[in-house]
Length: 100
Image 1 (cartoon, rainbow, N blue to C red):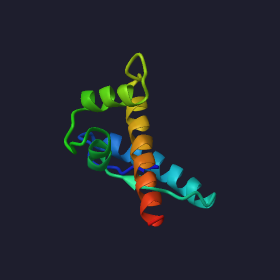
Image 2 (image 1 turned 90 degrees about the vertical axis):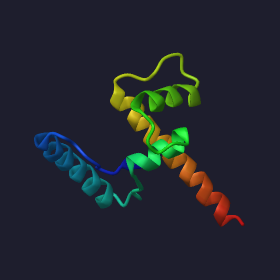
Image 3 (image 1 turned 180 degrees about the horizontal axis):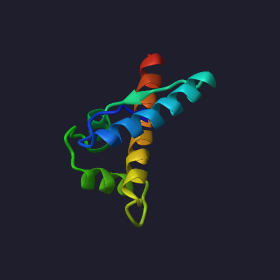
């Protein structure tokens, strides 16, 4: 699962992140890995119940859901975990719906 590229203020950052993301998606496609993409709003909604949650709320929920002693550092780690948790929740829902 990957987070959909959303918005950056710095144009150089957008280009670098876009290039890295493109290389990763190409590699996954070549390996026939199923790719699931989630928008930041979807990730926030899945983890906190509120699509406009602050980064600190995402970090706190990541810590709570995984029963960690501390918030994962650096911030990107908590973001990646949040995307993974969003995917797990989405997958569980799809499995439940398919079994009906």
